[in-house]
Length: 167
Image (cartoon, rainbow, N blue to C red; front, side, top):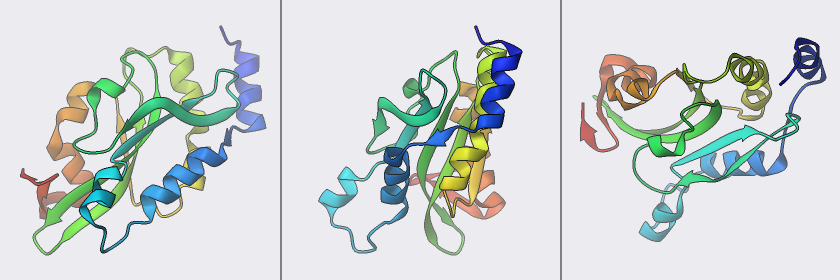
């Protein structure tokens, strides 16, 4: 169990984002406009990140990435926090778009200390993810399953489809 003193020392010392996390972000951010079908299949759709066991680094949550489809709700731990990058594909009334969404998963059932540590470390990862236009804090699976909430984050009432399905 973390003491309050240790918690505040973590905030003051700063959590580091590993090079692997930055490389994954850069890979997801740079998309080939003329990607062939094989390249599209290998493209990461969603990736989860967590704090290392010593709480000093933000690292890839091993085995927690999907290549196609919606953000996998089974990937998210029911009782702990995570950060995620989600490559959202959607259409507005004007055009098709793809944007990265930074998600802060903080389920209501997560311990208060975990929520505090992840919340205080969020800026460290966001600073490394330059160019992210959309951020979404999710506190339960019902929030995540509500496609309209994500559509609202992406462009409000101008969004007409999300992941190829009408809203």
